[in-house]
Image 1 (cartoon, rainbow, N blue to C red):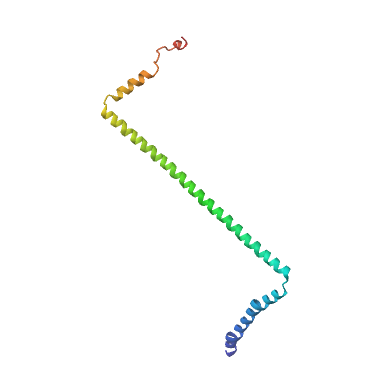
Image 2: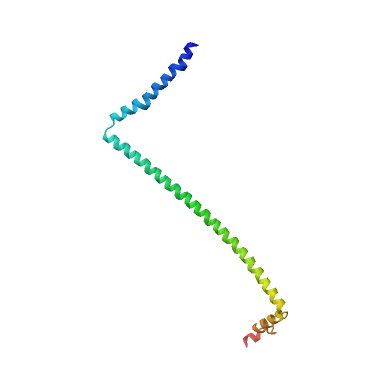
Length: 136
């Protein structure tokens, strides 16, 4: 039991510390000490390309969501206009009916006057069944 307790409390934490020291401090320091100007320029170029790629993807996503939002607003505006057009049509029809009723109430003979005016403006019907009067 004492051997297991020593492994859990001393050996494994020491092993973890040695591994972290090796991978997080020693290896990066050796890599940096071996790096030359050419390697540093390559690393800077790769970092710049990654930043550029990030910006391009960000702009593409911005345009994509912006266009989606614009299309959504355009479609909702079209639906609003179409529904408003139908409501305006119904309102105009109701106003027209109300005006006609008001006119009929004020002038009871308005229908006869309108019918007489329409008959005088329309061309007269001929009783000629063969259509000979049309060629005369």
